[in-house]
Each structure stands twice: as structure tokens, then as C-alpha cells.
Length: 285
Image (cartoon, rainbow, N blue to C red; front, side, top):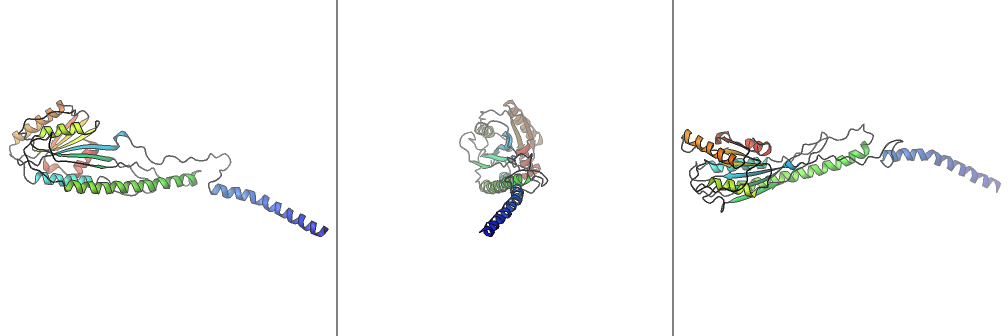
């Protein structure tokens, strides 16, 4: 009986020693697994790895597209194709890397065609692309809280990749709708188209793309506030009369500025491009 008791005591002693040795090892494993922190460390709550969106994260854009018979028949279809290409390239869908990724602004685009009653009955198309907040670079592996922070960052990256892919899909779908928009040639009441955009688009920083020869042949319909609105005019000159076309551009710019437009610029169709349109929509003149 004594030998048995002795054996039990010896076994118990060995067990206690083993448990004492195991405790610090378990604590080390807990640190590696992120369930405990080294002495003096503060557990990380996981920083916000997505960049904040601002009020300007969505570009509000209006387009007056003039398919009237006074211009070359190819003008409106060519401009429509440029708009569609600009929309298609608005969101690239490119996934983030360890260096992070820039945010992508959203787009709220309203297209109206110039008609003889542009302020009232006019073919209209509205499309939108969601904005995507950026992603900061991946945390440094030397950080004391890397094990926790990197899990948060990887989750944020998955969210970013999903959102940018969805934005690219929305851009592709919107571009197809723009490209398929039927054109309805009519007379030109151009001012009414701009007035309609001024009253429909959300207030704030806005851009209007006016695609027209500016030959107004109906009484202008004036309405809406153009404050904080920039206007880019793409003006063909079907008459070939430089003086007449320049006067039309000057008078239009004066009228738009008198209604509150902050900046107005006019270019020829040859200077227009999808890249020029996109830059204007994002950054203005």
C-alpha cells in the first residue's frame, strides 16, 4: 500500500511539474493566435481601412444632346457613342493590391434630347454608377497588432473587390443603355433642355454637357438655378460661318452665366472625346 501511495504521489508531482511548464507555453500560443496580448500591449480594435467618402463622391452630370436636322446627321450618334464609352470606363473593376486602391466616384447621369419642346416632352435617360470607398495599404507585418489588423484589412479588401466589380458591372449596363438610346430628330429649343436639367438634377456641384450647334429656333424656356454648375459646350458649325457660330457660343455663355453658371467653355466636335468628357464630369473645366 505504501508503494502504491508513493507511486501516486510521484505521479501527482510529475503532473504538477508538467502543468507548470505548459502554462507559459499556452500563454505564448494564445498570443500567436490573437487571443492574448504581450505584457503592456493594448488589444487592437482594428482601424477603419476604407477611406471615407465625401459629399463630392458622386458626380452629378446632365447632358443635352441635340439630334436636330440643322447639324450633320453624324453629330448626335457620334456624341452618344462618346458618352457611352465614357460611362463604360467610369469604373474599371480592378481589384486592390497590398498597396491598397483608390476610391472610385459614383455617377448620376441624366441625358435629355433637344426638341421643339425641350422643357416639356423630350426623350430622357437616367443612369447611375455607385461610388466605391478606397482601401488603404495593407498593415505592415512588423506591427505589434498585425495578426489582428490584417484580418480586418483582408475583410475590407474583399469588400472593396466586390464593390468595385459591382460598379464596373453597373457601368457596363449603363453604357449599353446609353448606346441604345433612340435619337429623335426635331427642332431646337436648346435653352429649355438646360432649364430642365437645372430643375431635375440634385443641387450642388454639377456639370452640364451641352452638345448642340446652339441654333435656337423656338422661344427659349428659362427656368432653374445654375449656381455651382459648370457647362462644357460641344458646338458644331454646320453653316461654316465662323462669325455666326462664335456669336452663338458667346451669347450662350453669357446667358448661362447670367443664370448662375460658374464656368462655361466651348469646343469643336473634333476636340471632343470620351476621355475629355470623363475628365470634365470628374474634375470640371
